[in-house]
Length: 147
Length: 147
Length: 147
Length: 147
Image (tube, rainbow over all chains, first blue to last red; front, top):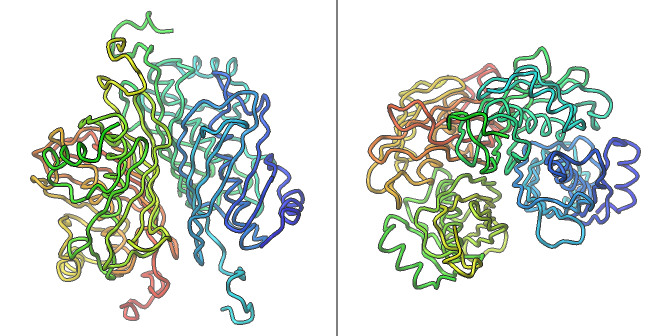
């Protein structure tokens, strides 16, 4: 497992464009926050769909890094998002991710997104990440034995 | 049908956060461009998934506005994206949207995304938008009644 | 809320083609079983993807009927399925559905599917149903007041 | 490339449960037909969603077999379907598949589904298949090495 500190450091160094803040990371899960300001809004005074999608994608990425270690080239292969309720324009977005399946080359996870302080999700996402083959996986035990 | 100029003016006034540039808009279709710079990249020197998703979503929005008129509160209800190839880090993203179905309350469209100058798509998306009920649709006859 | 008996009776009368068996139905949830025999298998000795999709769709339909009452013309507008693990060829499929959002015209729910007796999901689905406007919804209280 | 005859023979032998009829198969494409009878209908006198999903999935499977050869263990990893129009109860379903990306381990394709004789799609699907690693791909040179 990768610690919260390790993930944050990696992101700060390698991915400074990312606006999300990692709040929790554990094997097979993660919670991230996306601050909401003018750039995040769209007509109608609400958080734009792309911000929600980016936050869902980021939560998946963090949950996978938190499980298999720092593998920067792990990439999204698909993301499906359903928008459920209008997010508050003055609340951060909180995304909670659970990994449903961690295979050798693919990871699938789901993400529930909330306006901070509310328990009714504003969106729900399911995404798939491709994991490069060179990764040594934690459960493999003996890294020397890997092909 | 809404002209390219009308759509551009509306977006500049109401949605200045949007980075996409509308290149073509027609009934049931649209082409938009998303400039690619540092903010659009992710580890691995490629355009980030969220930029592709935002561009797909924007292309759908523009194609719908181009068909039913300026209806700002038309909102995304779902988006499914498949990432197909690594986008070039130094090319703009071009998204080409076709509306598959324009119903009374829902519109469904598909979007192919390309690195400019390449014909192999970097991503493909299918999205659904919800259309508010107060809209008078072009086929309803009286465009003057539309806001 | 609709009782298990009411839902079963409706399905037996109106939808005899359905092979799923309703095991539990509650407001905003449902559990259904799909018996697995020769017709459900595909090359590789496993339950075919379409059987899993049909079961996910059926679980969503039942959860919605269980919440808003018997509304036969409630129809699927989209379904997204991720296949996670190989189902056992000799176990029934159990699908557990939770409704994420019940709006006036759209319901969105998620479904986890299992080979009976296993706790690791074989598939996960998210679907959207369109609800006809003539429905009197439970939470509306006074049906006479509806438009 | 695999011929129409080879694909039909393989399916008849190995997958007799499949109700779809292969009408065309080419590298990166396929057209299949699903006969519509009582078993395919649902309340409302229309073809059920699961039949459309099964037909979409089958069209993808056939298009992939038609491109990489007979690889029975190629399996669906995800399918996203949008239902667009009510299919006719007395017309066969015709599904036309195009492969968007054929990678080493994943293939992604899209499928448009029609009631025979109509040009407005009743549904649209995008699916992903996982290709087992043992496959020798046509472009790899030696087709004789393929099982």
